[in-house]
Length: 299
Image (cartoon, rainbow, N blue to C red; front, side):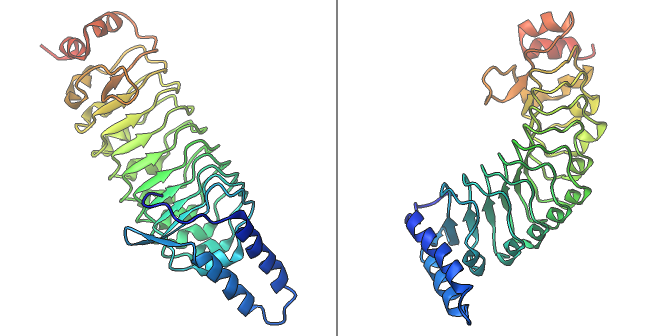
């Protein structure tokens, strides 16, 4: 979640909060108990770079103390690396959240109430068991970063087309056979990660992502690249490693910002190894990207 390390929230204190939840059910008027437990959690919030922040990461939680949802002032909440299987509708009460980290849990779904979080700018929900995304997430139109990597997702709801502020989208390691149509409406995308899915093609609409600088589609079954991909003049990294490409579009020489054939995974440039490229493309590439572009460029 960034910033200074906050004081550790001990398992003993979490157990005290859970015990207070059980005790208050036996009380005639449970409000004093509720407020007291909420205050114990509030003491562990910190202010980092002007944001009210709470981390409950790596606590072995299988449920979240109900008092947490009273902390409406929270702006950054880290629930990563726990054992959470679900989130309650009360999540919607934290309507000031800017960053929500759910990485590394056992979530099979996100509650529809996530759509109430209108100020949310960053959502990490990677490494869960999500098979779908709620339609209501499309209401989070301030989202700038969305990671749904390492789940079981096959598609996205059309409502996400409204995410015009989104700059980074990670859908890698899922079960996606076609790039969701809504993605092509995310005009602000700079980074799109679709590695290790079930893609066979990329639609011509890819040209609509005019701000795209990084496109990663390695580890799929893509057999052809659309020529419209070559109109993305801002593209600096294109990774098509480990696909079924036999050739490349003749217009590829237009991607002047790729610069070179890349070797290291983090290098900018064109990544195109481990494809069944036919002659003469295969031989031409031995001379580097400039040799390929000279070959493709019309005389």
